View (cartoon, rainbow, N blue to C red):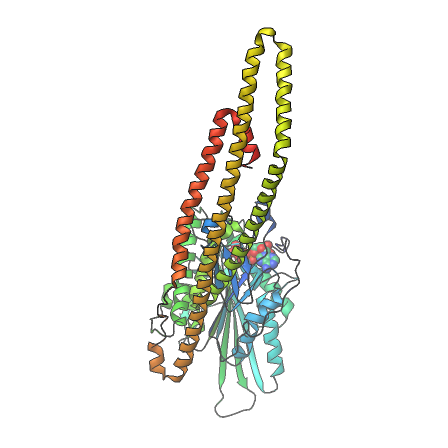
Length: 572
Ligand SMILES: Nc1ncnc2c1ncn2[C@@H]1O[C@H](COP(=O)(O)OP(=O)(O)OP(=O)(O)O)[C@@H](O)[C@H]1O
């Protein structure tokens, strides 16, 4: 965690946008696993290093990551996607406030917890991407911990006429597979035990039951300072442990009954250790060992979430692979709800880490993003191609004007050049004796012929430029045909999926399970698209040929002593 004195909100200028309630929050009977993504503001350090923004929120659920290594001006590869889009239940960028993140992800868990359900919220992502900021926050911008506890106490207060509650809170860290009490580190390492009801408990952990928000914030800040933080190659103050805030709520009715039912709901809020890969942080020794433990527990967590989110399979869920998953056993499975908030930096320097995080988070959710993703990519490309064509048109217009102007000015310019030649001649005469008259005539002839040759080279170069432009326009036209077809294909795929979904409503459950595959029947590509693909290959060859001719011509002109004329004139 970094201190509040080091805000990374260099770009925090746009007004916050509201999160649509339909995709952000989730009610008790809806999502079991919600995956959110938060892209933090680019930091001053990243800007100073020359990083550019490569992660963009496209809408309330979609984030696009651009590959900084791909060349945006490479027209011949423009049909290849530079960007990849990822879909989440809700996405936030630098404009999102702490309150917006809390409202859309965690607030709706509270009602469940006070009525006896378990829930887990965890912040995932590489080091320095804002996990602690989201969970703990700062004094001025408190995060999910405090906002949740505040609302939890308020909800308890509102129902306290009928119900009696007991709330207890503990804060621990798991470091190198060992558990430490962050509210009382002097206790040393603690063990996990299963109680008589099979519930996993941390033996001997400090439990506090304050309901004063300010006190809680102070306790958590103090606890957080006890966390194992070490400088890594990637972050000066990297949290090397998973911090777990556990809130247990016991509820019983005030109406005395023979059968007194007591319900206990548990809420885990977890700030995970940085997910960067050991190889990328160049960590050695102790740091590498930590890295291995962190990776192991994150992998175990990912596996559990994967198995839980894949309802169609009856995969065995192995919670025993790490302390973290053992502790969360009751809160990940069963009737509980889980919120994962993945974090990334928007900077180009963090591309690899961001891509890994987006893939991990996307896999956890197992959302079918393809159709929407294609639509987005295609529409981007159509816009790109239209832009390219407009640019090329402008360029042709410009060249035409230049050509016309040169044709108009040709003879006059010629006279001027000849004037220059006469001037040279006069100069030479001045410095040579009468015997040099014959040589002078010869020199004059040579100069005139060189000038004519140079005019010819210039004319041919202009012609070549014109042909290249035409080839490029043709290429773009074919790319547009292909993009149009991809668009159409995506539209059909979407329609096909919708029909499948409607069909599956009418089938019984056993049929549904066997019918949920993604295999869409192959769609035959129209002949004009196949022709467009072939033409592009041919046009690329043509473009190369023209380029070669141009190079030869300029080179030849240079060799013949016309270099500066040829290059400065037509070849731009
Ligand atoms: N959404 C945000 N708005 C403003 N500042 C942010 C935001 N997210 C992160 N920051 C700032 O970025 C810095 C790093 O964030 P933070 O310490 O939360 O990262 P982390 O993911 O917890 O890192 P680690 O895994 O190393 O502990 C902090 O200075 C924090 O204040």
